[in-house]
Image (cartoon, rainbow, N blue to C red; front, top):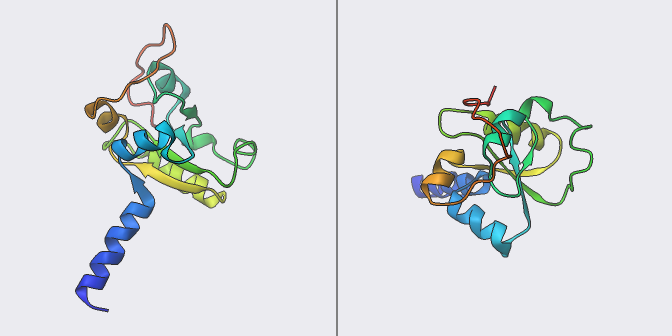
Length: 132
């Protein structure tokens, strides 16, 4: 295998495992069926989340908590952003449970940076990271 082939496999692999906020927004607007999973704590989710996202903390992901999720859908996990790895832990958990999954690059930080909206529960306060 030459260097070019190795690079092509590397970059194709990244695109198979990650999604950016632009492509996620297009998917949510109907480009493809996708379910977004906020892998942070319920308090962090309440303080602000991607519209339509489900809250399923990475610490609670197991066969029972995911029993109602469709196995054929694509799931995109996210957390606060680059300084947090709850989305990575959530993606790994879902993958181990047999789901198709990608991770949102940059999490909520980059979602907001790109001008996309958040939803929040009335009266919720920001608990900080909430990734633990």
